[in-house]
Length: 132
Image 1: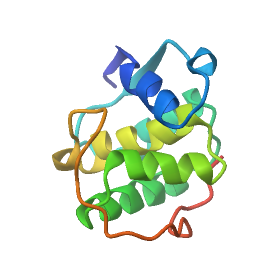
Image 2: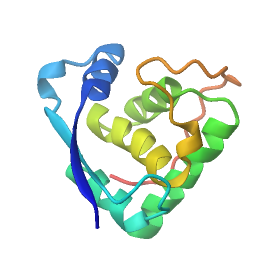
Image 3: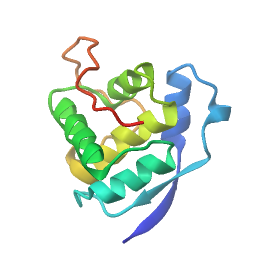
Image 4: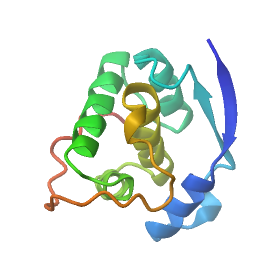
């Protein structure tokens, strides 16, 4: 399994956007697997490194929901904000969106921060599976 460490400029930016202290964010995140590999196991390892718990099946469900919402026009920022306001930490919110895209729908990856996909509106976070 391929493993690399990336700096988390996206994490710092998301923390600032969410109004959280960037001092609570970790300095880097670890990426497992490869772009577009559809590996729920690799995605789960990343979520766990960001403080999440759960199963590979729950991780895959989360990734599919992220991809579906991105396909419907939601931006990365909107999804990160919804996860963060739904009880996820900023770090886990960023990982859920960025990792979900990386593994399951890399065509939706944008240059973070500030993806500009139009929003279909609404504030319902019920589409997000339980993964903490």
